[in-house]
Length: 139
Image 1 (cartoon, rainbow, N blue to C red):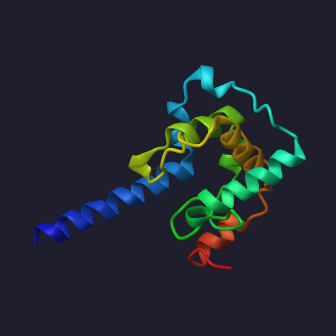
Image 2: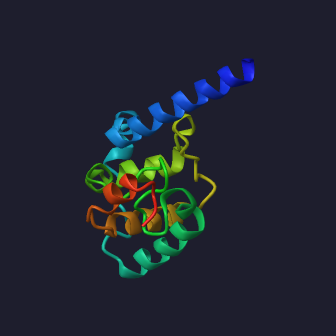
């Protein structure tokens, strides 16, 4: 009985985490000094390609190969993510948000994390995230 209660609580917390991630509340935790950081690779096509490769290796298992999200994992094509500043996304990669299921990628060298940011910011908000969510994360 206790196991079922714990599992139920975990499910509720996971749902709350997804809602918070979708709302962008994670942005409130980013210190201003990090928020205003500028990606040294912004607009660099080679960095976008390298970031795409890193994304597929480290991020696609949760966010999907097309970054539209899988299951309850958020789309990185969403207006919220695409509207976030580069420094905010970089901060999240560095610090993670384990309570919401986002691991820290601090072990990746800083240039690699900036390449992932360049890749994520190169994506368009083309509605794929919303479509993927409506059909369970599949295409």
